[in-house]
Length: 494
Ligand code: NDP
Image (cartoon, rainbow, N blue to C red; front, side, top):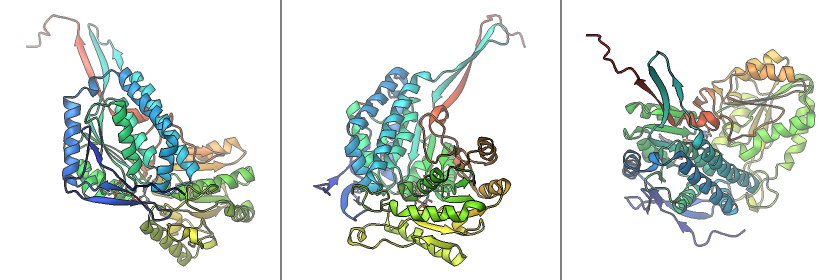
């Protein structure tokens, strides 16, 4: 495997310039699949973030972006999409090196990021208002205006795709952005900044800062010059962001965690459901907010279904994401691996039956990476922590059920409400169950496909608001009413 040579030292993108952290501090970025040092990035602190926010504020209040026509804003986004596609292979390989996932999945993410910029490039010209002409002699209309300076904080599981999901709708709507990737996965966001530089966005419109959540992220969430905060990450952090954002009542969008039910009825297409259950649980190493991490199986097929899952698990080939044929890569960090392993200990101590995996794989190729075998717990109960808490790794918890109503009850027995899947050939039942589950993203006879055209987000503690689709751009728009009196006579009230 080719190494990134020499190790690249990045700078941050603030106010149209590449800069180091004021303190000069840097962070080493490593490949979670083999421990290789792959890059150094600036370690921003609150003062760096404040400078980026000032630049964005200036760009919004006095700069040309929001006065740029929607057509031209859209054209910039199309150019970004084209550049991402041109550099697709490079970006996908970099993403693998930085966050561990298999190359085929990174290629999908890069394509999705380009499509997202293209979708919102097209939508920029479709931001319409409303008119009303009641009462007589007046006309009222509604215009949608950009919110202003948007702070955007993204996680480590889909670094480039999440950057696109945040930046594209915000820019299409005429906002300016300060984006903070996870301290673990900043590289593709900085490469995106380079692409943004090449397409010529005015200075300050997009600022990419690299630094830790504690300090840099906190400043972004609390600084009063920021009008809106958009966050994807864990529910615990989401709560902190809400508190910090309350200082100046920022607009807020949160995309948080899930413990999503994937429900298999006895009449489902057996093979398709087995595939869907494995893909739902183990895609992206299970480090997915919408992972189908709770598999609810109807009792009459439970034993056969579990046996079929176990038989197929060896096809989830583990390895470095750039090794051909690999289907599951390394977890993001040694700390996260330990956290997931601790859940495996918890599951065993709670009495769940470990039927598959649960260990680090053996062999020289795995020694320096954060690898864990795909793991399945059977006979999980809804009360167990492995049946309730988001593990965010390749751990599938199987809960048997006896009836449709019990499946719905178990599915809804969670503080989360992000996603759900249902497998049945009875479409009436499938839709009945989907309509009974309190979740924002649902699938019938499939699991995981996402579309830039459709809204993404959760009920309950899985978040606030929606990203993507038409709803996604609304989150970056204010609504103004304008009332015009056509009658020139004074109102004569006094
Ligand atoms: P976090 O929620 O901590 O991180 C997400 C982003 O928020 C990162 O950019 C992080 O920065 C930043 N951040 C962290 N703390 C603060 C803060 N106080 N103020 C502002 N920004 C902050 O996720 P983790 O990476 O630590 O993962 C923890 C758990 O969250 C996972 O195990 C998983 O359960 C869940 N998660 C859910 C995701 C989802 O898509 N819904 C994605 C990722 C995680 P930095 O990385 O630099 O600390």
